[in-house]
Image (cartoon, rainbow, N blue to C red; front, side):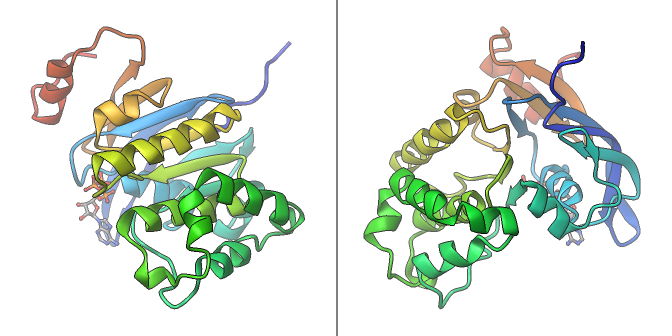
Length: 244
Ligand SMILES: Nc1ncnc2c1ncn2[C@@H]1O[C@H](COP(=O)(O)OP(=O)(O)OP(=O)(O)O)[C@@H](O)[C@H]1O
């Protein structure tokens, strides 16, 4: 008897920009209900991987499947409709829109419209700061509030899996902790997640496994309970990679 399909399977993915490849055959998986971290030096392809999975860019070779379904012929909108939700690093919020408008409009797929009221309740309970500032325009939000709203937008899309790109970028330790609690809360619901994050301590506290990305490839896989120490991780970052 076979078990449930992985949330995500990526096999030999090549993708890039213009005429050059950034991903050189990347392969990884996210099991059902698994939380996975992705870390590595700047500019080595972590965001590009999320872009290639969610079809912001089109992979040139390789394959990705979501819950067992190949994504090769699925459009970026189709990917959102299936519930594979990419929360990008950059601030893509509309500056003049208020928090509530932003959240309500984010439930644009048929599946998400059905769950709109429940998801809105969930987001406002998860992020009470958003509830307090519900009529505030996006352009006036702090960096941390924007990150919360970006995750809220993802949650309004009725996700079956979330891909978060550096959710704590630029946040103070206190806000990081607030966000970590919220992300852990989402994870406890069983939601599979792929989290790109530079803050190793932060991501290790949240995930079951981590992948180390180096020059567009997965160079190392690390289990949360493994005995890889801080120094070894620093060596990976600065080029003295330990043998896999
Ligand atoms: N739209 C684009 N057009 C051309 N090159 C790009 C584009 N986006 C990213 N790149 C390049 O692709 C490479 C990988 O970038 P990517 O954003 O995937 O790295 P990353 O590992 O996520 O980095 P960081 O940790 O700094 O966010 C970089 O050299 C970057 O300059």
